Image 1 (cartoon, rainbow, N blue to C red):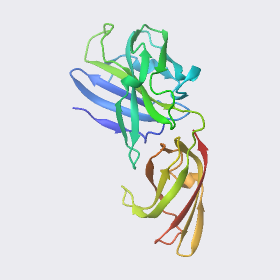
Image 2 (tube, helix red, strand yellow):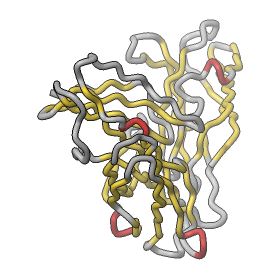
Image 3 (cartoon, helix red, strand yellow):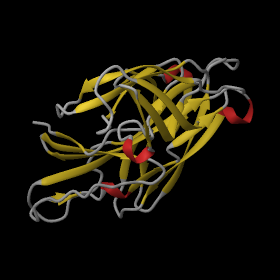
Image 4 (tube, rainbow, N blue to C red):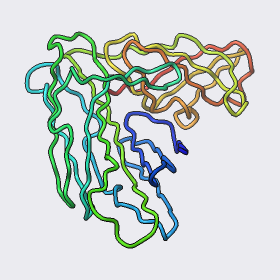
Amino acid sequence: MAVEIFVSQSRESILSFRTTRLPQTTAIVRSSIGRALATPLILLPPFFWCSPAHALRFTPLIVAMAPNGQGASQSFQLDNDSDGPAAVQISIVHREMAGDGKETLTDAEADFAVFPAQVVLLGHETRTVRVQWLGEPAIKDELPYRIIAEQLPVALAPAPGKGAQISVVVRYEGALYMQPPGVKPDLKVTGAEPASGADNRRKLAIDVTNSGTAHAVIYNPTVIAESGGKSLTLKTNQLDGLAGQNVLAGHSRRFLVPWPTDLPIGPVRVTLDFTPSL
């Protein structure tokens, strides 16, 4: 049996904890990472033994590489702060995003050389992972990928004491972009309408399209909504579900934000202003 608990919606980078009790997976806990790392606390009964997998770190988590020259290679760092060994596999996948933000990841092994792709870190060991772009050196648009560092559930050291053995393994999903010179986002609102959210509450649906050549992260957004002859300005703290979200180049997204209390329900016009950030 496997249970997934989503702590929050993924934005740019993801940290996952998988708690396994052989022979079955008991839980997966996933949380989002922005500029700072948020680590969920996992509590287990005292008679279980857990490997200290949460001490594994992978940096950096957001990277832009160039398709040629010195920028076509990038170094990452793996740190094992625990006392025991950890087996880690590093892979890179291409990233597509649906209108609701859900991602489809496909193999991109032919686009990159990763060395080492698998490594065993001893306790308190640090290793460098090097990534080299092997793809077309003259791309015109930004290409989005994820670099994944996943701890493998391999017993490399004997478990102390008796009782059921539970292994807590870590999976990092970083954002990696191949960015040729001169790329930039071009994000525009293409529609807006009243909608209902999963909680059956009234929402303002905002459709946006990025017709530019680079992704856009929507920082510090401000929305002007007009309906029924009334106009309201919504600040960042009123735009949960939109603020901090990512729209990949050539992609469209639909965002649901709380419908303003004082705005008449009906046909609505929306203007979006934000601080673009690659």
